[in-house]
Image (cartoon, rainbow over all chains, first blue to last red; front, side, top):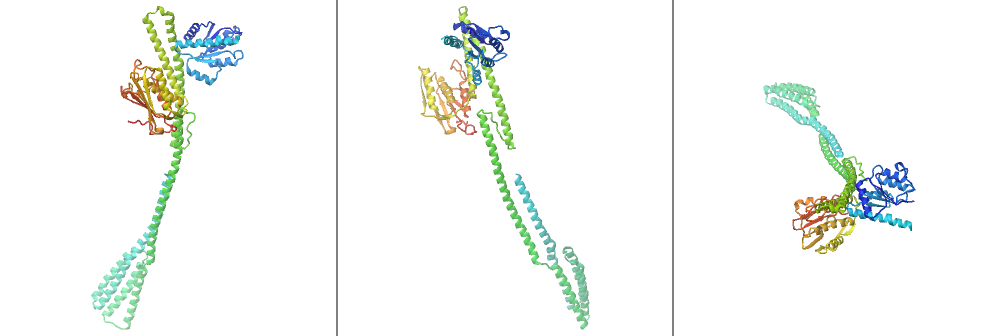
Length: 146
Length: 476
């Protein structure tokens, strides 16, 4: 069973707030769960450590993953997600600050569903989040229900 | 070098041997023949004198003259002693003895004739005297004559030795020359091989291929040079990697705070706009504009660094066609402006299509931009020269610039005009230069304030990795 939550793995509070606001402006009302490092993100998804008591069936609808993260970096988190049967099909969107990371990602062929270079411009950023929510939350949901 | 030295040593050896042969012959001539030639006739003359003095004294019936013949005799004896010192084959005692016997007898016979004696006894003594005279003459002949054939042989031996020396000199010289030629040929071949390896290696480095180092084990200075070049390549590779990670940090770490500044300024305007004075809103808008600009700068800087690392794909392209397309886009972007691009039908070049599009976009945009204050924008494009030395140019008749700043033109973020005057990030010409350099070409500009500007560039050509002194020379 899936919940409607969005898991945001992001260590930068400013980016978290801006993402949250962008979702709000795009009228995406799904619950946003924010995790600040790669290790905790894995704990959350696999219900270990401080998230041991979480219901393993409650998987987020989409994971927004930053690449530069404390403890375990985004690419390693993605590798663990793709390597486990429980999360193999989980939609993961890489949200990155730099285009260079995009190049890196091509090399790793990490298996992200898409990756987005976060624009500096606020309007572009909000537009980006809106499209992302539309596709992964609304459109994907529609496909599943059909 | 070694062969030449060896040649000289051999030459000197042969010369020494021949000189020794010549010297022994010369010594024989000097020690044997010359004293005989000198003293032989003298002693013969001395003896002739002695006999004549005796005969004359007898003929003149002069006993005093007869006794004076003793001096002549003594003179000959002293000559014999002197000659004996020089003529090694002469036995002075034998000769002196024979001389004394003859003189004694001759003196006795002469006195007897003077005293008027005649008869058989006197004739017998005279015969004895003649025998002794013959003995002296025989000794003189034996010791003081020489074999003319042997002397001739000695001279011809010297002649031969001289000829041999001359032949040896010629032969050794020719041998040395041939050796030097062969050595030079061998050296130049190995030098050419080393230079080839160095040149192709440096060519790879210039193209940014640092994985294959120069493999040269010639054991000479070229190997040192190759080692230094390899070290340099490794260092450049490390620096490039550092530069890439630096770009990465700039991209990631600089963009995030920019996004925050912009995002939160927007929140302030959107959520708290009504509470803000118009001055405050103006300030915030300026913050936003600057942040946006900085975002563009960071992005273009990253674009530039990506460009420098991208793969270069040379193909035959028509620069005129690309330029016409770029100009059409510029004109379409500002339909109110009147302008024309003057370019020949075809400008074929051997270059990377995508990168040359970026070059022409930048050059034509600049020409277009800096002509914006003219009523009519005329941009010319063309080429002069042939092949690798082909020089392409893009000319406008716009604002131009002071040549004093021509060197600053191509630096990243260098601007010669204020943003208010002509907008831009200051990265365009840096991009142009990076691309032209990637092609192994050069780019430069000529201008006068208010008289327009001309940008020239070359593209290196297929052999662009080789150093071409004709390239990079700027006309005028």
